[in-house]
Image (cartoon, rainbow, N blue to C red):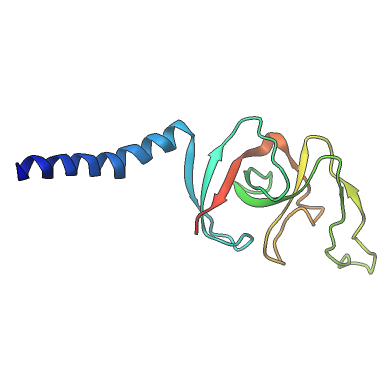
Length: 142
């Protein structure tokens, strides 16, 4: 009898630890992502890939930026039609204030990192992110 119980426990353990999580990740299109950058607090995230995803303020999103090969994680700070003021200081080549208020364009979002020196939508060269470039929503695990 002890052998059958051990076999059942081993089967239950295998299903619970290996098969069930894999099935959940497959059904909900989830991936575990290791974030190597310092722009967001945390290094391990779960990402749920979405098509036609419309993020809300303070959600963490995974997106593809034109300047980078790898997808990027950042937090949404402003959505379309909201007024946005970058607050990055002054242009280096002149003393002109570059903190001009802008309105986030239709079907775009502004993204920010948690780190003060994060390269994000505060900089005109980074810009706003088109919704079609957003791959999904992320949650920090660690």
